[in-house]
Structures are given as C-alpha cells and as structure tokens.
Length: 131
Image (cartoon, rainbow, N blue to C red):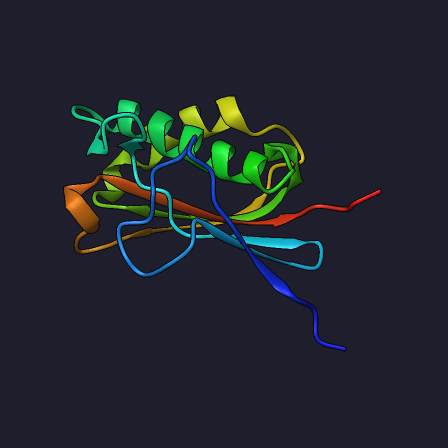
C-alpha cells in the first residue's frame, strides 16, 4: 500500500519562491525544501553577515519542522549550502545553538550561487514518530 504524501505549509516560515512545498511528509519522514534566510514577515533576505543569515535560515527550518509536528530534536540529516565555504566555522558555532547531541548527520557544500543572493540555505530530513 502506497503511503500518502502531505504538503507541510506554515506561515511562520517564508512561502515557497517557486513551484515547491516548504516540506513533504510521507509516513514518519519529513523532507524540507531548502530554507533561505528570508524573514517571513518581510519576504526579504536578512541583510548583513552570515551570522544573521544562519540564524534566520535555522529559525525558518525550525518553523517548518514545527509545522510538521516535530522539533529540531527530530532532525536526522541536514544539508547546508554555503555561498562561501570560509563561513563554515561561523555557521558551525550557530548551528550548535539550535541542535544538540546527538547531532544530525550533515553535509556542507560551497555552491556557485544561491537564490536571491543568499549566503546560506539549509534543508533537512526529519523522523517524526507519532504515538
């Protein structure tokens, strides 16, 4: 029997800027779209340093995970896309404020460009066990 997939949408995170969902849930798994550092109230990228952008991207990720009924403790894998890999250490220190041990598995990459000129984008896979 095929499991039904459900779109996750929350107004606490930015709306999709293209033809995609904020996240898709299938069974106990949630797959988020990449979360850019967009302020959901303004629809604009957080200006300034990678510090502010990382906080905003992680707040957006937390909002999407919450919209699916989970918490950041339920995140099992993240992928971090960076405009500049030299931001890796700064991103790590902020990331550690949002996740605790055991940390999710993670990959991080420098990319040529991100949508809207962002410095970071973060996506995640979440396992939410319903009781």
